[in-house]
Length: 419
Image: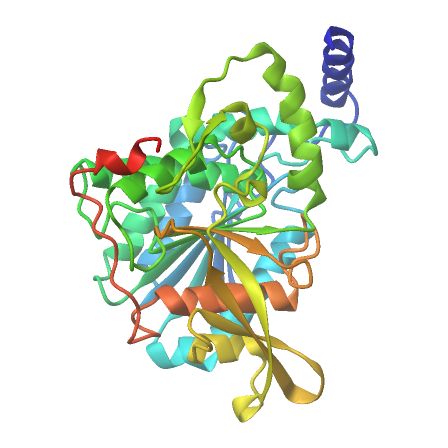
């Protein structure tokens, strides 16, 4: 095992020396173009903010431009996105995010409410090298970088500043979504954990503690230790029957977090110590914490509390709308959503709760026909499902939305005791 660890260390060091991507910001502002980090030419607006290897702002004027963009937008729908492994602000991931912004900006449900779409793309050097094999071996190096972004100040400062600026428009005149993928999901989850803790202990207003009105992470490449702790904390405060604050989505076809992640963290776990901890729930059994360290939330059966279910029902598309726009306008089958099929038909699916842990942290296991693998987050079906989650949680689109959880209450420690 020691030999394997040394070999991996050598390989990772090689990725840092061979064909490395630039350390300089890719969308920096300068004297000849003070607005290089923003784009307002396509109906929607988008701003880019980049962070260095230690999580520091690479160009602080990028944050200023983003905040000015939000400030000058009437009734903003702000979607902040943190990308993952193998991406940066020049990858195809940007085009995919912009495509979603454009679709939302055109959707009648969004326009009828009066929203104007603003995207903020938080970039970091998720792509270290384009060299085959070496780029796969960059997993450990890039995971460590994502953890630095999550633990240091500037990235969370950007997320919180964006939310604060949007909320200056008034409580019912804006909406914010925070989205993360892969290691970006790790960054988002850790940012949200601090906010939840602040609200639980009364250090923040209940409606302004979270860095967004809705948080979604897709195929997060984070271990499930924090997820277990967050779910347990929410469960102890009896948060049943409330709308989700945090939704973690993982495809069963995601080989990177389902296969590669356990291998990588398994090697790293050799030098660590682990206690026994209870799984959340009334009948939570004790488990070695290594089981949570070496698995992501969406591949840990002890934490999964929702699954996607095909209802095997087909409906006609009202007004010929595609599934994404239909899901923004209507709920189906409880916590349901539609997916496009041939000839203008729509298939009905449901996000079904499983187990006895009803908390506003949804850990959703997703069928691979919706998201086939780790990077397949921008396909038509995945975006339609996320649009449905957006409607489920948005009082401006859904009059029957469940109440927001009250977190500032004393914990019931009996719920955390092993039985």
